[in-house]
Length: 157
Image 1 (tube, rainbow, N blue to C red):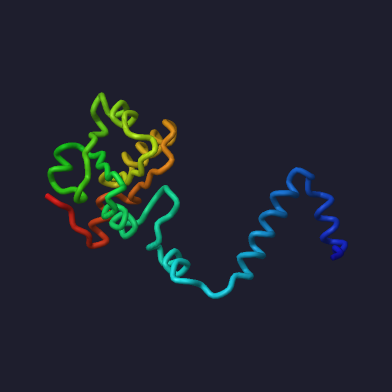
Image 2 (spheres, one colour; image 1 turned 30 degrees about the vertical axis):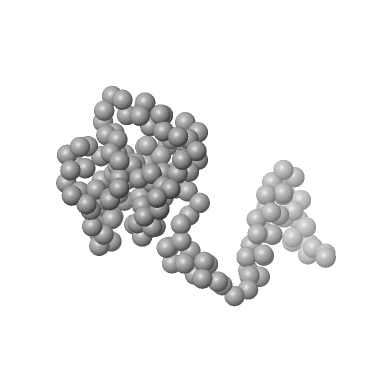
């Protein structure tokens, strides 16, 4: 397949080391455009209800994760906040205690975790800490319990 003079000129101006990522991106875009009929999983992913690999999750995704007995749900709010209501089955590890980092470090690095706090700030910092410690399977409720409640979900007293 030949190149037009404009395409060839653009390729010559592109440094060699940059061509491979550009080519890879182009291949992915072409393959994505050639996809056939979508299945239920694709539709669910597009609607935001499918669970991502790891990282930020919506309240709907978090609710599904919290219902999974293999996932440890961790509330990083204070005891007072936890007492006002928490996700059912959650374990509290107070972000503000002197032992917080040690408690997180003592968790099984092969475990799968769902983190949340009030707004997503403390849980986001906790997710970053866990990543630094070698945890790979960490979900973080985007927007915390504020987003959870705004989505019409209840907390356990």
